[in-house]
Image 1 (tube, rainbow, N blue to C red):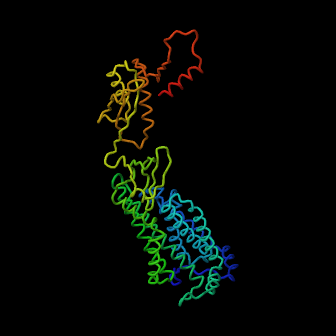
Image 2: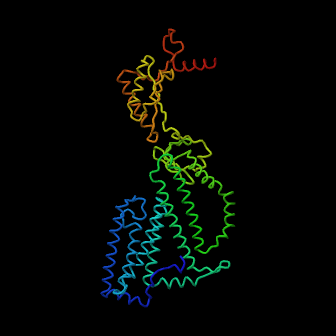
Image 3: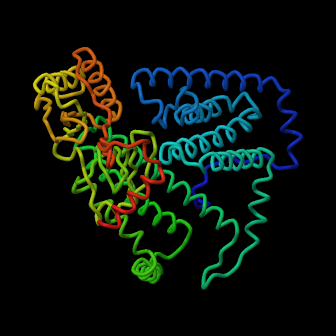
Length: 453
């Protein structure tokens, strides 16, 4: 903010600080307190009525917050009402209470706007809590300095500390005001982009979700770029001087940041082509899971076990990715079981298909199919194949339930699952002998037969 745009009431000088404290003992201070209490009640009732009327999402609401009073609307409306009440009570009251209330409400509005916008824009970020505390401390310290009259003294001293940067003289006060202006512009840009994202992603499912996610990411990047340019202009930096910096950034991207740039471009390609969409079941190398989110630089894949894999977008473009639900969400599963050679093949096939059909997740069209897949060393091997339409709900549990039901049905109908069988042929077992051969003799015989072979 520039100095010409500051619209703050003049603080009390340090010399009048005692007189200001004595003004609280005058009868007009009670009128100010009553007016402030009335403003609080009107603001609270208005916010509560608006919250019931619009019924916003409490988790994503910047204006209302979770409890109504922790949003932006309540302190902002209270500040406007306080300004009006101060103008009305100026003829009868000494402005003692308003001298404290107005700066406190302005600090509260600044804290609420900064904190709520950051919570919505960067939900779950680790650095969010320290930034919130920093913003709160700075706002309250500025309010205290304003109330006590130290703020103009501090600003005057900071204005004396200056240095030359080229042909421009920059002071500490100018730098601080520029940083505050830049922060305000960027917070407004984040606020608008968060509102656009919430609007675009509302009721978005299926194929439109990825496209709307791409549009919201592009809108946020554009607004942040515009906000950054306005913030730099507010600080006093000549934007034409950034052409050299832009060329240097281009060279840096071409050499050192090419992987990062490739990931951002790949993310845009994925979101526009929709080859991988949010909610798809994918398999990358040995990792299989559901696409939970697609960011500008990486994609989050969540496995059925709960583990999450952060995959750079370039890998999804350059490597082979199995999308199990791109064109058809149905997935084929199978289980193999062996039975004795003397078992009824038709009965075994019917029991296997019955065990699959008893599970509600198994599709009826196409139906399960049990086939004699191999003649094993220990028995007949059957393969039961079936289709499911919800692989994201897990596959191991369903296969276990089917195997348990197969075991129950086989036991009910007397179908034998054979143990592994091995036949041992002993050389010379048919010749009469006085005593059985010793282990050493058998070992020597085996060595001799191996040498002959």
